[in-house]
Amino acid sequence: MQGEIYALAAAICWSVAAVFYKKGIGAGAIPAVLIRTFFAMLFLLIMFLILRGGRFDFTLVGFMFLNIGGLLRLIIGGAAYMKGLENISVSRFIPILFTFPLLTILLSGLLLNENIHKEVVAGTFLIVTGIWILSMGKGSAGEKNIKLGVTVAVIAAFLYAFSIVATKTGLEYVDPFQSALISMPIPLALLYIFYSMNNGAKTIFKFRKEAYILLGLGGIAGMGFGSYFFFVSLTLIGAAKATSLAAITPFLSSLLALVTLKETVTPALILGTAATVAGIWVII
Image 1 (cartoon, rainbow, N blue to C red):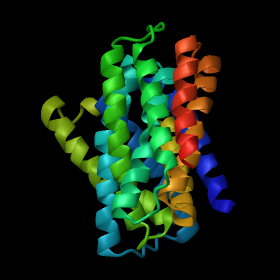
Image 2: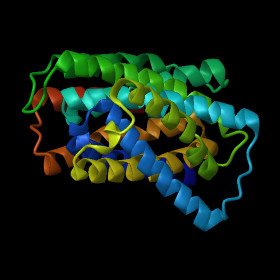
Image 3: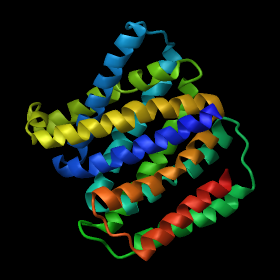
Protein backbone atom coordinates (compact mmCIF):
# COMPACT_ATOMS: atom_id res chain seq x y z
CA MET A 1 0.00 0.00 0.00
CA GLN A 2 2.94 2.32 0.62
CA GLY A 3 3.86 2.39 -3.08
CA GLU A 4 0.30 3.32 -4.02
CA ILE A 5 0.30 6.21 -1.53
CA TYR A 6 3.53 7.57 -3.00
CA ALA A 7 2.06 7.39 -6.52
CA LEU A 8 -1.02 9.36 -5.45
CA ALA A 9 1.17 11.89 -3.64
CA ALA A 10 3.11 12.39 -6.88
CA ALA A 11 -0.17 13.01 -8.70
CA ILE A 12 -1.10 15.75 -6.22
CA CYS A 13 2.31 17.41 -6.63
CA TRP A 14 2.11 17.29 -10.43
CA SER A 15 -1.38 18.80 -10.37
CA VAL A 16 -0.25 21.72 -8.21
CA ALA A 17 2.83 22.20 -10.40
CA ALA A 18 0.73 22.43 -13.58
CA VAL A 19 -1.14 25.44 -12.17
CA PHE A 20 2.12 27.21 -11.30
CA TYR A 21 3.51 26.47 -14.77
CA LYS A 22 0.41 27.83 -16.48
CA LYS A 23 0.66 31.06 -14.50
CA GLY A 24 4.37 31.48 -15.26
CA ILE A 25 4.48 30.22 -18.85
CA GLY A 26 4.77 33.76 -20.24
CA ALA A 27 8.53 33.35 -20.11
CA GLY A 28 8.34 30.91 -23.04
CA ALA A 29 8.57 27.12 -23.27
CA ILE A 30 12.34 26.55 -23.12
CA PRO A 31 13.08 29.26 -20.52
CA ALA A 32 10.27 27.80 -18.41
CA VAL A 33 11.91 24.37 -18.54
CA LEU A 34 15.29 25.86 -17.61
CA ILE A 35 13.89 27.86 -14.69
CA ARG A 36 11.74 25.09 -13.21
CA THR A 37 14.50 22.49 -13.55
CA PHE A 38 17.11 24.74 -11.95
CA PHE A 39 14.97 25.50 -8.90
CA ALA A 40 13.93 21.86 -8.53
CA MET A 41 17.57 20.75 -8.71
CA LEU A 42 18.64 23.43 -6.23
CA PHE A 43 15.90 22.38 -3.81
CA LEU A 44 16.81 18.69 -4.04
CA LEU A 45 20.52 19.45 -3.65
CA ILE A 46 19.92 21.48 -0.47
CA MET A 47 17.70 18.73 0.95
CA PHE A 48 20.25 16.07 0.00
CA LEU A 49 23.07 17.97 1.69
CA ILE A 50 20.96 18.40 4.84
CA LEU A 51 19.67 14.82 5.02
CA ARG A 52 22.53 12.84 3.49
CA GLY A 53 25.52 15.12 4.04
CA GLY A 54 26.37 15.09 0.33
CA ARG A 55 27.34 11.40 0.29
CA PHE A 56 26.58 10.08 -3.19
CA ASP A 57 26.56 6.36 -3.96
CA PHE A 58 25.61 5.33 -7.49
CA THR A 59 26.87 3.24 -10.40
CA LEU A 60 27.83 4.46 -13.86
CA VAL A 61 25.06 2.35 -15.42
CA GLY A 62 22.46 3.85 -13.07
CA PHE A 63 23.77 7.36 -13.75
CA MET A 64 23.55 6.80 -17.51
CA PHE A 65 19.97 5.51 -17.51
CA LEU A 66 18.77 8.20 -15.11
CA ASN A 67 20.22 10.93 -17.30
CA ILE A 68 18.66 9.42 -20.42
CA GLY A 69 15.38 9.46 -18.54
CA GLY A 70 16.03 13.02 -17.38
CA LEU A 71 16.82 14.19 -20.91
CA LEU A 72 13.61 12.69 -22.29
CA ARG A 73 11.37 13.76 -19.40
CA LEU A 74 12.80 17.03 -18.13
CA ILE A 75 14.22 18.62 -21.26
CA ILE A 76 12.69 17.35 -24.51
CA GLY A 77 9.47 16.27 -22.84
CA GLY A 78 9.52 19.37 -20.66
CA ALA A 79 9.74 21.65 -23.70
CA ALA A 80 6.75 19.85 -25.24
CA TYR A 81 4.93 20.15 -21.90
CA MET A 82 5.41 23.91 -21.72
CA LYS A 83 4.58 24.38 -25.40
CA GLY A 84 1.33 22.55 -24.82
CA LEU A 85 0.43 24.74 -21.86
CA GLU A 86 1.18 27.80 -23.98
CA ASN A 87 -1.48 26.81 -26.48
CA ILE A 88 -4.26 24.96 -24.63
CA SER A 89 -5.83 24.94 -21.18
CA VAL A 90 -4.65 22.83 -18.25
CA SER A 91 -8.01 21.02 -18.31
CA ARG A 92 -7.42 19.90 -21.91
CA PHE A 93 -3.65 19.38 -21.80
CA ILE A 94 -3.20 17.23 -18.68
CA PRO A 95 -5.69 14.48 -19.64
CA ILE A 96 -3.94 14.07 -23.00
CA LEU A 97 -0.49 14.06 -21.41
CA PHE A 98 -1.63 11.37 -19.01
CA THR A 99 -2.05 8.84 -21.77
CA PHE A 100 1.60 8.09 -20.98
CA PRO A 101 0.63 5.38 -18.42
CA LEU A 102 -0.74 3.28 -21.29
CA LEU A 103 2.44 3.76 -23.30
CA THR A 104 4.52 3.01 -20.21
CA ILE A 105 2.64 -0.25 -19.63
CA LEU A 106 3.26 -1.34 -23.21
CA LEU A 107 6.95 -0.45 -23.03
CA SER A 108 7.26 -2.09 -19.60
CA GLY A 109 5.95 -5.32 -21.06
CA LEU A 110 8.30 -5.15 -24.04
CA LEU A 111 11.46 -3.90 -22.33
CA LEU A 112 11.09 -4.65 -18.60
CA ASN A 113 9.20 -7.94 -18.90
CA GLU A 114 6.26 -6.71 -16.82
CA ASN A 115 2.92 -8.45 -17.47
CA ILE A 116 0.46 -6.89 -19.94
CA HIS A 117 -3.21 -7.79 -19.38
CA LYS A 118 -6.02 -8.05 -21.93
CA GLU A 119 -7.64 -4.95 -20.41
CA VAL A 120 -5.05 -2.93 -22.33
CA VAL A 121 -7.13 -3.29 -25.50
CA ALA A 122 -10.26 -1.83 -23.89
CA GLY A 123 -8.23 0.86 -22.18
CA THR A 124 -6.58 1.83 -25.46
CA PHE A 125 -9.95 2.35 -27.12
CA LEU A 126 -11.18 4.59 -24.29
CA ILE A 127 -7.98 6.63 -24.23
CA VAL A 128 -7.95 7.22 -27.99
CA THR A 129 -11.60 8.22 -27.80
CA GLY A 130 -10.81 10.66 -25.00
CA ILE A 131 -7.97 12.25 -26.96
CA TRP A 132 -10.22 12.68 -30.00
CA ILE A 133 -12.95 14.36 -27.92
CA LEU A 134 -10.46 16.66 -26.21
CA SER A 135 -8.81 17.66 -29.47
CA MET A 136 -12.12 18.38 -31.22
CA GLY A 137 -13.70 20.44 -28.44
CA LYS A 138 -14.12 24.18 -28.84
CA GLY A 139 -11.38 26.36 -27.40
CA SER A 140 -11.84 28.09 -24.10
CA ALA A 141 -10.58 31.55 -23.17
CA GLY A 142 -6.79 31.77 -23.41
CA GLU A 143 -6.32 28.83 -25.79
CA LYS A 144 -4.22 29.79 -28.80
CA ASN A 145 -3.82 26.72 -31.02
CA ILE A 146 -5.70 23.57 -30.05
CA LYS A 147 -4.21 21.32 -32.74
CA LEU A 148 -0.64 22.33 -31.86
CA GLY A 149 -1.34 21.96 -28.14
CA VAL A 150 -2.85 18.50 -28.56
CA THR A 151 0.01 17.41 -30.84
CA VAL A 152 2.76 18.38 -28.41
CA ALA A 153 0.78 16.85 -25.55
CA VAL A 154 0.82 13.49 -27.35
CA ILE A 155 4.54 13.89 -28.11
CA ALA A 156 5.21 14.67 -24.45
CA ALA A 157 3.27 11.54 -23.43
CA PHE A 158 5.53 9.36 -25.61
CA LEU A 159 8.66 11.01 -24.23
CA TYR A 160 7.47 10.56 -20.65
CA ALA A 161 6.78 6.87 -21.26
CA PHE A 162 10.27 6.18 -22.65
CA SER A 163 11.72 8.26 -19.82
CA ILE A 164 9.99 6.18 -17.15
CA VAL A 165 11.32 2.94 -18.61
CA ALA A 166 14.86 4.36 -18.61
CA THR A 167 14.40 5.73 -15.08
CA LYS A 168 13.01 2.42 -13.79
CA THR A 169 16.14 0.73 -15.12
CA GLY A 170 18.35 3.31 -13.39
CA LEU A 171 16.49 2.81 -10.12
CA GLU A 172 17.80 -0.75 -10.03
CA TYR A 173 21.20 0.77 -9.21
CA VAL A 174 20.44 4.07 -7.42
CA ASP A 175 18.05 4.95 -4.59
CA PRO A 176 15.10 7.30 -5.40
CA PHE A 177 16.42 10.39 -3.58
CA GLN A 178 19.73 10.38 -5.43
CA SER A 179 17.96 9.42 -8.66
CA ALA A 180 15.73 12.48 -8.62
CA LEU A 181 18.77 14.71 -8.14
CA ILE A 182 21.37 13.21 -10.46
CA SER A 183 18.92 13.00 -13.38
CA MET A 184 18.84 16.81 -13.66
CA PRO A 185 22.29 18.49 -14.00
CA ILE A 186 23.45 17.13 -17.37
CA PRO A 187 20.11 17.60 -19.20
CA LEU A 188 19.83 21.09 -17.68
CA ALA A 189 23.35 22.03 -18.79
CA LEU A 190 22.74 20.74 -22.32
CA LEU A 191 19.52 22.73 -22.67
CA TYR A 192 21.14 25.88 -21.29
CA ILE A 193 23.99 25.59 -23.82
CA PHE A 194 21.47 25.14 -26.65
CA TYR A 195 19.36 28.07 -25.46
CA SER A 196 22.40 30.33 -24.96
CA MET A 197 23.73 29.63 -28.44
CA ASN A 198 20.47 30.87 -29.95
CA ASN A 199 19.46 33.61 -27.52
CA GLY A 200 22.55 34.65 -25.57
CA ALA A 201 23.90 33.40 -22.25
CA LYS A 202 22.31 36.17 -20.18
CA THR A 203 18.83 36.08 -21.71
CA ILE A 204 17.58 33.57 -19.15
CA PHE A 205 18.07 36.20 -16.40
CA LYS A 206 15.89 38.87 -18.04
CA PHE A 207 12.35 37.69 -17.31
CA ARG A 208 9.90 39.10 -14.79
CA LYS A 209 10.43 38.16 -11.14
CA GLU A 210 6.97 36.58 -11.00
CA ALA A 211 7.98 34.09 -13.69
CA TYR A 212 10.93 32.83 -11.65
CA ILE A 213 8.79 32.53 -8.52
CA LEU A 214 5.91 30.70 -10.20
CA LEU A 215 8.04 28.39 -12.31
CA GLY A 216 10.39 27.78 -9.39
CA LEU A 217 7.52 26.79 -7.10
CA GLY A 218 6.15 24.56 -9.85
CA GLY A 219 9.53 22.91 -10.29
CA ILE A 220 9.90 22.26 -6.55
CA ALA A 221 6.38 20.83 -6.32
CA GLY A 222 6.41 18.76 -9.51
CA MET A 223 10.04 17.87 -10.14
CA GLY A 224 11.23 18.01 -6.54
CA PHE A 225 8.56 16.39 -4.38
CA GLY A 226 6.65 14.85 -7.30
CA SER A 227 9.67 13.15 -8.87
CA TYR A 228 10.87 11.79 -5.52
CA PHE A 229 7.45 10.38 -4.61
CA PHE A 230 7.07 8.85 -8.06
CA PHE A 231 10.54 7.31 -8.04
CA VAL A 232 9.81 5.68 -4.68
CA SER A 233 6.57 4.34 -6.11
CA LEU A 234 8.41 2.93 -9.13
CA THR A 235 10.75 0.98 -6.87
CA LEU A 236 7.91 -0.39 -4.72
CA ILE A 237 5.15 -1.32 -7.20
CA GLY A 238 6.71 -1.13 -10.68
CA ALA A 239 6.37 1.19 -13.65
CA ALA A 240 3.01 -0.05 -14.92
CA LYS A 241 1.04 0.27 -11.70
CA ALA A 242 2.76 3.45 -10.50
CA THR A 243 1.98 5.35 -13.68
CA SER A 244 -1.59 4.06 -13.79
CA LEU A 245 -2.31 5.21 -10.24
CA ALA A 246 -0.86 8.62 -11.06
CA ALA A 247 -3.64 8.94 -13.64
CA ILE A 248 -5.72 10.74 -11.03
CA THR A 249 -3.69 13.82 -11.97
CA PRO A 250 -6.07 14.98 -14.76
CA PHE A 251 -8.99 15.13 -12.32
CA LEU A 252 -6.99 17.07 -9.77
CA SER A 253 -5.51 19.40 -12.40
CA SER A 254 -8.89 20.20 -13.90
CA LEU A 255 -10.32 20.92 -10.46
CA LEU A 256 -7.41 23.19 -9.53
CA ALA A 257 -7.54 24.94 -12.91
CA LEU A 258 -11.25 25.58 -12.45
CA VAL A 259 -10.69 27.15 -9.02
CA THR A 260 -7.41 29.00 -9.48
CA LEU A 261 -7.22 29.77 -13.22
CA LYS A 262 -10.95 30.28 -13.81
CA GLU A 263 -10.85 27.93 -16.79
CA THR A 264 -14.14 26.97 -18.41
CA VAL A 265 -15.11 23.33 -17.98
CA THR A 266 -17.12 22.32 -21.05
CA PRO A 267 -19.06 19.07 -21.62
CA ALA A 268 -16.39 18.02 -24.15
CA LEU A 269 -13.64 18.47 -21.57
CA ILE A 270 -15.58 16.48 -18.97
CA LEU A 271 -16.40 13.66 -21.39
CA GLY A 272 -12.90 13.56 -22.87
CA THR A 273 -11.24 13.58 -19.47
CA ALA A 274 -13.60 10.88 -18.19
CA ALA A 275 -12.92 8.64 -21.20
CA THR A 276 -9.16 9.12 -21.00
CA VAL A 277 -8.91 8.43 -17.28
CA ALA A 278 -11.41 5.55 -17.48
CA GLY A 279 -9.23 3.94 -20.11
CA ILE A 280 -6.19 4.17 -17.89
CA TRP A 281 -8.04 2.77 -14.88
CA VAL A 282 -9.39 -0.16 -16.93
CA ILE A 283 -5.80 -1.16 -17.52
CA ILE A 284 -4.93 -1.38 -13.83
